[in-house]
Length: 286
Ligand code: SAM
Image (cartoon, rainbow, N blue to C red; front, side, top):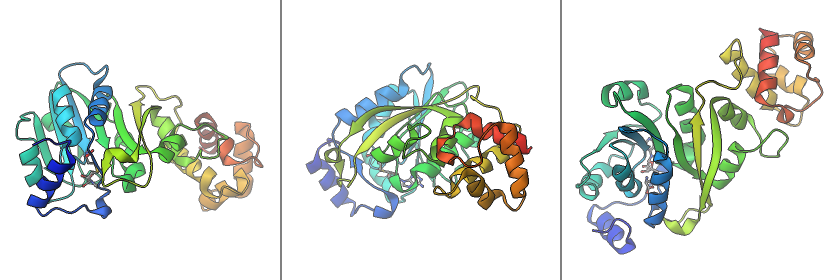
């Protein structure tokens, strides 16, 4: 069967009585050129032997391409109906293993220790859009030294993740992701390349986790609280927004004093600040 022919895919899904589950963000790639390009961009620069973790293989459209460019591929899939289909569509791919598990609950370090010793490890996925931010943050917060994380996400989210302080879509997730990784937009993918067609445009991005982070706050936990506090109430001044989150631990005077040490005006807006500013504030509070 041709994994990129609508007729073949429809027949395959019918034969398994499969219908798309919206709750799992299922939009499968149908145009071979797209998963091929994603897989090839993903492995660029990765030394051999190289391994890939795929999140949500679906019926295997991207997995098939990953199995051609990586030495080993391990996929996490949440939908119990998909492994029987995957064992048909990927029957020729001896280097692919499917783990039936929610990626947000998986022990990534354990999997890497057990399956990828001696391999350089990347992540590649057409992400389920309902949990894009959670998955990206989980991968980055694991502090695993992935070669790269190449993921297709909603175009608006890609714009947000690559925005700069002062841009209208710059937010807490932008600053948090940019603390862990260099983020680049690679290319856009239109809805016609999926079944069913999503209502939004998509963009493939590449995150490269930093070996040395651009800033080193004394307390990473406090740094993250400050960062989230700065964006908690976007229409308010920085001091009031910070106070709404950190008020249980610091008085307004203490926060104002710390901002003074950091050289940042209490009346500015959080969205004008970069990660080095958040590090200065959290260090001053420390
Ligand atoms: N990779 C396939 C493709 O490109 O055609 C399918 C991508 S589809 C957008 C998202 C996939 O992620 C689906 O297979 C869905 O079942 C799976 N998924 C959704 N939530 C998940 C989770 N928490 N953990 C693992 N897989 C998940």
